[in-house]
Amino acid sequence: MASRGELIEIFGRHGVVTAPHGLGDLLTGETVNLDVLFAVGLPLRVSGIYEAEPSREPEAFSLFPVHDGSDAIDLVVLGAPNADSAMRYLLDTRKGYVVLLDLESANPQLEVVNESLEKFIEFLYRVERFRGFSRSAGGDDVAIADYKELLSTYLMSSDSFAMKRDTNWWSMVFDRAL
Image 1 (cartoon, one colour):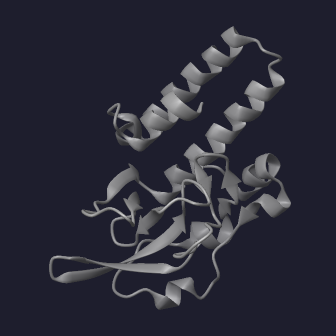
Image 2 (cartoon, helix red, strand yellow):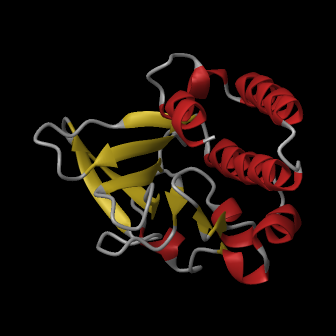
């Protein structure tokens, strides 16, 4: 998983945000360890893929309660795909998955994006590293294609579910945004 130092190296000191420490006190029931949100944080922005400061609510690090049958589950809002999106990345505080939810959908469904918060952060970090390489590659399409293939292989090995099918979120990101 990417460390706070690695995130700062890529996104800059002011480009990494952490959750307020009181966040854990608001959760009910058993929860996954949230230390990574406090100690490592998330990038503020990965253009076209992730935005920690959406233009409307719910905002990052707020709670989003959902009902799963008879159980109420607190999800932590992590951000959105872009500032104006009605979709939100959410952390399932019981199972640890990062999911995506379209808040304006007539039939909202949670789509698992990553198996864990740590893997979600790693994906964001690796995508931005790739973009930095692409900008500095001087138009070397072969080198960029090779790096993208290595990146895909690496991410598949670290969280195979995230890129298992062509319709998974990260597979679509690779096809459309990289």
